[in-house]
Length: 409
Ligand code: GLV
Ligand code: MN
Ligand code: MN
Image (cartoon, rainbow, N blue to C red):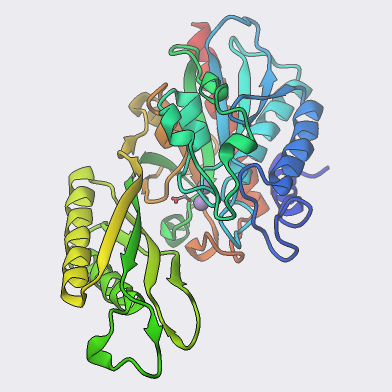
């Protein structure tokens, strides 16, 4: 019989291609796309087979519930996200969901009920790959989403309101006190665990994030006839701004990171000087003040570049999440579960964002990181060993067992 960890990895692999991908080649699964809905249907079946009742919540998260001995008791929520980045790996997000399903499958096949229900949630829109926002669905569940933030259109002009009932959306919020802990297992997406020769680690917290949409406007013109001093080339201005962002983050010599991950030049022709350049800017640090200082310096640099080059600019902040510490008592519990399963407890911080950041506004959060090969993520080469997934599953079961003993006391 295959182990639960092996099956969790195999299920991520199954969801890693069409029809569970928007693209014929590789994996791109964006929030509310046909591939997203198909993946939800497949996952719903796996949740039912594991002994859960399944529903979609008003934010179009998929939720499976495994009853405990007291249906009124606050629940344990286990989750991660089902959506992906563009041209993604197969494990960033889905693995945490599949391990939650396997944890419940192990409990239900052993006939074990806890003093609380366990719900497994598959969030959407963690990555922000479709709409100019991110983590809408976990913000909705945590009750921190401003309904005004739902007035969104994707790159093709499709409104979120045409895909989902946005009036009902905020009712995905869970009541304060209804969840006593949120647990998310996730690949590390960095090289620390592999470097230490460890399969697993306890996450201490998640770095603060800021994201902007920047538009620089100059003047489109003929590439053959406009002499260099007369140009107001928006794309050349963007290039200078991007290098300034890189320099500012690098010169900080800290955990400050700045990334321009998407750029468009308009009108986008070989023989036309770009009149407009649009790009994203993502800035992060474990220290919120450092993140804010870094972002401010980069925005100043963009303004200076624009002024020098005679460009207009508009900068819109599209995402702002504070640093999110994991719960101290739950970290201790995770360390104990690691030790019991024969893994040296090891703690590390997450540079990547997770739905746990939002859930921390509602309840104590815990995260378990799994080693991934060479720390590669947001890349089709993402890889996790099934043996590490099985190790994570056993630690999660130990963690749940300890929570059961605590809540029964
Ligand atoms: C999500 O993967 C993020 O950190 O942007
Ligand atoms: Mn990701
Ligand atoms: Mn993720």
